[in-house]
Image 1 (cartoon, rainbow, N blue to C red):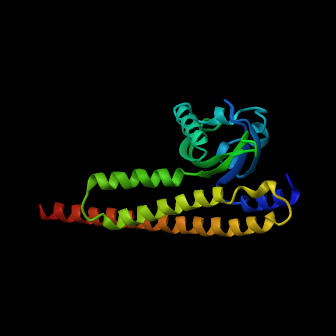
Image 2 (spheres, rainbow, N blue to C red):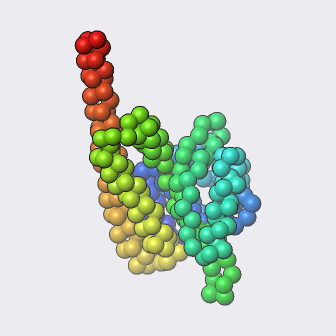
Image 3 (tube, rainbow, N blue to C red):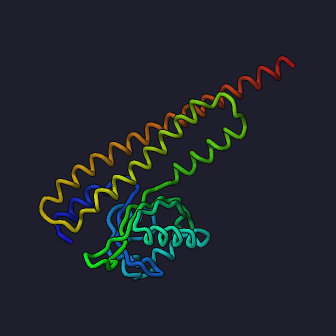
Length: 225
């Protein structure tokens, strides 16, 4: 990989919880290239994963999720489209984390598959928010229009982040002016991440306020009784 492109790549993903990859389409998803917060998400340095040195990426994928991941990837490859799948990573220390991956297959001019590439982002907050939202909606279906609207906005933000990263084409293979494209990508990813964070905070604040209101109502009812 071009040194300049790699430098820009590492700069883009030096913060936050995300990494990009290139891997073989085999039973291990054998990693050929990884850049970003690999250790933060996977729980081990990328040197342990590249080439299946100590562990394969497929081996880090939760046993209950791996078949679904393979199925989604295979279906996307067959259609020559993108996959967008959420799954858990089982870290070597026994902990787990949710991630969301958006990727695609890269083919040569002759139509031969060269490798798979994509972006993996931390989805822990997204999964937690979805669960909390569902619990809230299950408790009361009324007066939740604002929460639903906020949820839709945060999910759109996550979707735009995934689409942007793939549409950029993971330009690491390009030399020279590729850095300009990465600079633009970095700004857009940061802007979307900031937007995502704002919506997440608004949802959390709204839910916290609802819980306080429910507590006050319950207290008032108790006194009245």
